[in-house]
Image 1 (cartoon, rainbow, N blue to C red):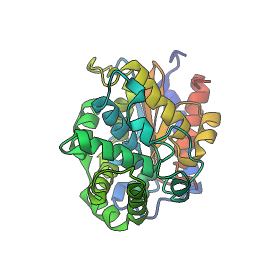
Image 2: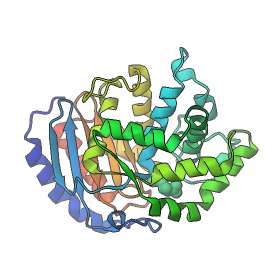
Image 3: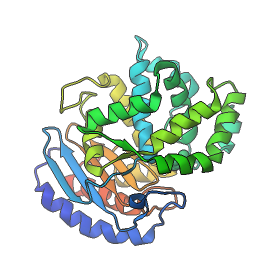
Image 4: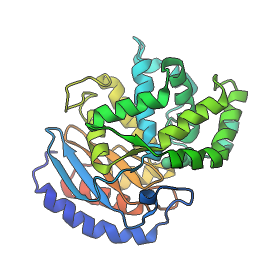
Length: 313
Ligand code: GLU
């Protein structure tokens, strides 16, 4: 695929189709920041490899990246722990690579599978990734913010109100962490791992920044803005594979079918994705479908990959 249409015009047309779909969704009940709660927020950005940016809507409004942070934490863990073994690293003995088919915060599967989470895109898997990061980083959330800022080409923030609210309400995450500790799959103090996870979910970025930041995964692991190797090509491919198969909660099959590109969503309504060798993409609209993905975001991405004929399949 090469992008040979007027993308600015295409994005405007898609926004018109996608925005009304938000009315079918519901904003996640436990969100806190004003931006995350506004059901009318809508933003869509496509950033090409040469830096050309196509945007529409509230692309410069920061919102909590929530579960999209799991991509950055996984990348950081793979960076820190990259060995000659590459993808055979210890991390992959402690977390799987299969879609869960269960909600992102389910405890049931974890009990059956003896504390080994299905994949790093569900909460339990992200907690294991954070446990690994604790071995390699003095301050794991700060390292994630540093990575995200470098990739976004600007400083990204953190919403302390979200940290505080989720710290108080994250009972299921704590339950998962204790369960994994009981199976020996979490080695650090539960509260420390939970703190890292809670802070990474509260990182705030804009739609434009996220579309920039994800591009290296569409470019064999090299940040096209700086030429810096973020991950080796084989590892970048693995991250994209996990996004495609596990990145949209238990609707990953539906997204593969309907959208056809590696994506990762978050409960504040963001979905970032990649058009291999072409561009990074991000869409944001807070109302969610039942599985936790943005309703309008789903429609927008489906329209984009259909119009550009850019499904990877
Ligand atoms: N921070 C929330 C949680 O851990 C949601 C993360 C997400 O799936 O976007 O429950």
